[in-house]
Image 1 (cartoon, helix red, strand yellow):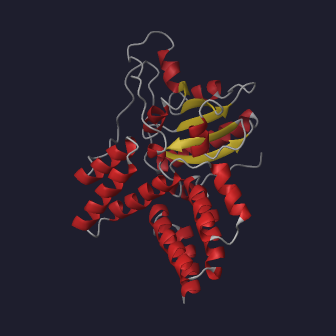
Image 2 (cartoon, one colour; image 1 turned 45 degrees about the horizontal axis):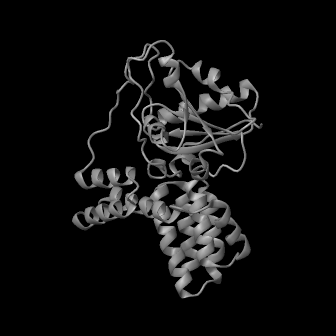
Image 3 (tube, helix red, strand yellow; image 1 turned 135 degrees about the horizontal axis):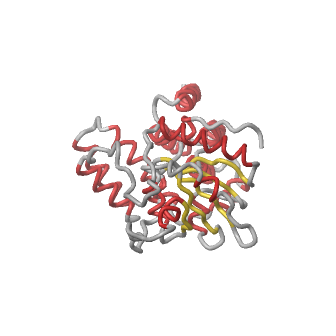
Length: 305
């Protein structure tokens, strides 16, 4: 593995996965669990019924997600545990939890990603040497600190530290967040649209609407089918828009921008309007001040005029 470099920009471009995996239905383990409870809170096996807990935990402490399958056992438990609760590990059987694997665009196992504040960050495929893995984990901690995720899981079994708790969301934003957690993207979109109608300058609502619209479009899709359709029709606007959504959801922001800018000139008026609208949504998701947004906006302006 080459020297890993993880940038804050890569994380900003990733989409919050809170809505891609439904919140856990089973109750969490008791805080008063006996010996081994602390370790089990740092290292846990997750599936589609419990992954919502993992996403929420990543808002307090960075979570490393290790995908494995039959015959390929997870191996990062001891290494993650050595960080004394500053990192958590969730192991996922990709074959038994295909929805999670699809959300992270996992093509083969073993594969490792990080979750920081609900947003995915691809780390590596395969298992590099321990020094290389530790270097990557150190960078994840640095990036998490830059994004305000600085909690820890105390090893004495106490509750997860709540330092730096976020202030309450505005009422309509909370309605939207709750709806996303329940998988009701239509209700979330309605709440964001109402917030925008009440306050057109509510940029958080504008960005939230763009994100939930992306989640609506991704819901139920099979990544392999979307990519196959795009490969078969490289100039079809709808096919390229769909695969660009996949790219953006996986944090591949430059790929999403480049794909749509490439096909834009060859489209009719309707196709160009659809691509322009989608790019404007992407700019809201990634952030107006992100260098990738600035470059893509400049390229779009050149194509328009």
